[in-house]
Image (cartoon, rainbow, N blue to C red):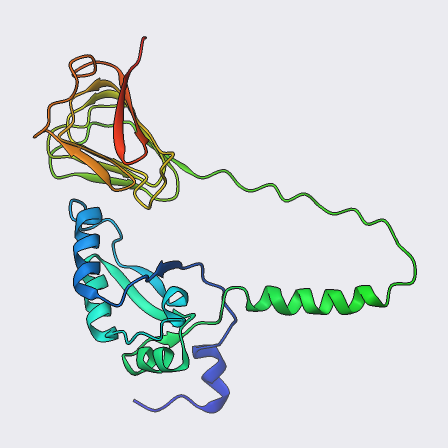
Length: 254
């Protein structure tokens, strides 16, 4: 097969600028044994939660301590929880170099661009001779997406509402799993696992008109059937919320 001529190269590929939105993994310890235990406690019951999601390792909490991080082991540890480490930021020169040696790229600081813009604005303001009223547009954030499920979930099935709430209009049977970054509403019997606030949202809640779950979790605080639910919510309409570090069970009157 003949190679493509230079004239045809532009038809085969091109380069364009792109902006990616990535989750930041804020590392607060260089002790990977302790980190592994913490990850297992929080996500051990949902090993496929992240499904290969790319992350930036944020070292800003470790930079002042000048700790050495074993990046090959850290990358492997995150991979066990289906997190794909692709970059690092906020570390010292030595930490960033160690990360690059392990195959990570150095991402720019998230506040660097804002700092440069602020400096330029301050310089311009000094040259203003008279005040001019300016209308500032109001930014209205988009509402988080909500996922709707209108079919029963059988054993082995898993549904994850990333970035929003999950509303289920049919039964969540034993062995099924419903996960949401926001709240979970089940307008049917909840007999499987329900994991709300999967990424740390402590305001998330779990609702069901028939509360009979195998496992409940909000922002990493969980409860299994090993500890029976209060009798006033078992098999009845109820909501689950987080109060401090414990789950609170409230009956709902319909």
